Image (spheres, rainbow, N blue to C red):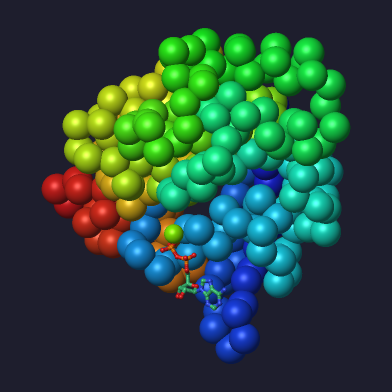
Length: 238
Ligand code: ADP
Ligand code: MG
């Protein structure tokens, strides 16, 4: 697992300043949650870490290596999206193994990793099904399984639960917390759901319009918000 360091990261789309200088230290094994209103730049920041967006300026390091221009597949990261984007014509097993097969990993190793992830996520009985025969929560677990088998240093999650109903969201939140413990994973997680942020995070990063308003442990933000925006967002009385 690896540290992730952002130094004065900026992103412009044409004339639009979307990320306006973000500094952040994410420690190995930490569960960091980005929160903030829609359009504040959460996904853009995550996509820059993943290498799905160019970084306009600033430095991104993962595990002490500058990653600005490194191919996404060589950053030691795996991303889980809001839309699970499973391959409809493949079984669960094939979906989970695909990236490894594509990378030329040998069959026995793929089988070992897929079986290990299936066990963690309790997907065993579903391995030969196609995505259309799965519930939303089950698809979600397959999407996480696809990330796990790659054994990344860092997991990136972009609102992975927002397509699930309320009850399932609570269940999956518990699952993700357990996963974090079990894998001792470094996780960067985007949500606009305060409860998700408060319950999952070691550290919350509150974003507003491309700027970090405050970084801290959930209770610290709750007890001592830097300003009214943070107070309003985290839901503390001040
Ligand atoms: P969030 O995930 O916090 O809702 P985003 O990171 O998706 O916010 O978007 C931040 C801002 O950047 C928004 O104003 C959005 O319209 C803009 N934006 C995102 N991607 C692009 C793009 N490819 N081209 C132009 N503007 C974009
Ligand atoms: Mg987003």
